[in-house]
Length: 299
View (cartoon, helix red, strand yellow):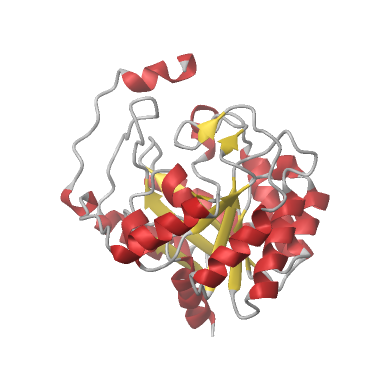
């Protein structure tokens, strides 16, 4: 934890009214939570302390994390556990598909911890999971939110060959802040994943996301959106960074809903086909709705 001590000393900003939400923990929420637990699965909703968990679970949706719950990277914004992962569970894809079936999902979002310890970065498991879901629920759309695979194009090809509807890889922050926010990542490598995905499969929608409030400027955010658009990204999410604990990076600024609207308007003017931008937007938050809005816009 030594590398995070500078974050501890800085006091938190007061959370504005538009970020204060009333949690929903109804019967459906408990049903989804119990199902995830009983089937030995992990969700980003729980592992990353997502503020939208009540709404999503109550709507019978969840974003599943495969390849365990321990990440090999040390990103300073993320609440997922870091360390040395154990061997992954080869039965996990089938259980994810069964959970999607029991929840009667029409659109499933699958992500993973970063597994730099695996030669393919976990690509084969993404592919098997996608195929398992589509085998059990042929009508279910699938979005895969993948790590950077250390730039391995062949691993990316394996994932794309499983025919997901959306391939997402998040940029997360502006290039100036990468060393501080994402010390194990590389901005150009991230852009190249987006570009390679579009080049390999033009029929699959490429998507990315960025957080704001970590010390970037609005112009830097717009430049990232422009870069992503030039590299084949068609959908972009922009949401407010929220500090998971005192050990994580502090929030430098809370953007207003009006500022998010401006980012959406100007970002789309710079070439991004569709942007979902609001304080509580997350890459996987109501992802089926983001896809529907994108399709409506381009039709």
